[in-house]
Length: 315
Ligand SMILES: [Fe+2]
Image (cartoon, rainbow, N blue to C red; front, side, top):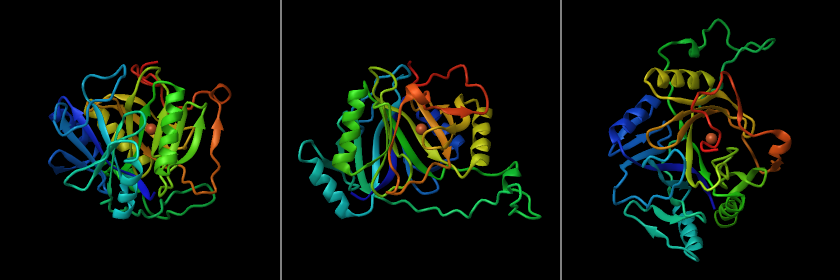
């Protein structure tokens, strides 16, 4: 299955205006019709919580207030791949197709998932000019990250994290993505956290299914890729200046290596700014990481966590 990555995340929210302002403060560009684009044209779609076009709410968490992620749409390379997915999933579950030629179905945990032929416009960035000791490359040239008015935009949707009610449920749903949709396991944390990437992706993870808060399920956070730490810091500082609440960061994760900064969102749960995630090929051997030995796989951060920080949110 040539699934590339996340094409669109659909949220059902209580306050459309506040959520639109939040995404604009993140650097998304409004495309109208409640859609907010990254540079690669991957999209966050906002709908009212009770919009009849949305899948049913499938969410239980300590932070749920009526707003949450309702559906994740994966982008694929071709109509043939789309047909193959429809054939595979319709063996044991309902698959529908809408007027936009997007397929809609469910994963094994009941999360609404969809598939469409990608419309993304790949962004190819020039190498960073970073002066290392003994190896300067940016000569007689100020760093562009030094500019106060630098525009830091989300480049693409990177990943989604689903809560699973327990380790067994996480394992079962991870098996679904691997055996039915061709996802690859990147790392397994304690048999209760499964980092995966679809077949045509090299990102360490585009999905994590994790039992982090017993009994909870649904989307915990979505993550968006920025150029580098300069862009994360500029955008994160702007978000704080606009009054949005940091959850944890900036820092770097211990699994996947990505730079990170989490913010609470009025869309429900968290949104994460990321950059510099591990790039994997089929030579990568999935690791089993035992949290009892390695400690909890969170991140180191450059400053103390906010008062609202709780790993897993409800534990
Ligand atoms: Fe994340």
